[in-house]
Length: 97
Image 1 (cartoon, rainbow, N blue to C red):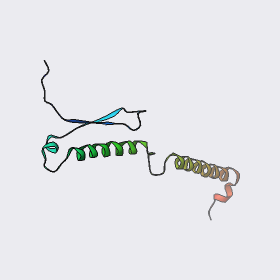
Image 2: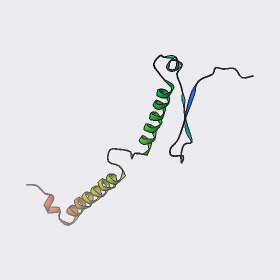
Image 3: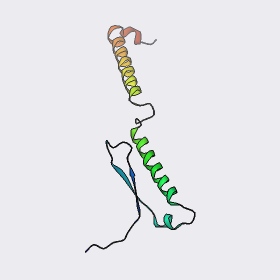
């Protein structure tokens, strides 16, 4: 025998089924019983939440993305190589005074 309570849920189909088939939202009881809240509003909010999650998952991490990370790594390698070359080939240039 199964005991429990019944809950209202909303299933939102994924626009990109490569990773997810659907999102399941459990609706709060007070959201259903509140006056002025329609079923369309609840469904619209569930879709917006699923869409914003997918947009966040698709965007590159960080502010600049992977391309700029490669640029910074290359710049760091060039500067480190330049500092090494100056130290090996022109040690007198680093002496101050």
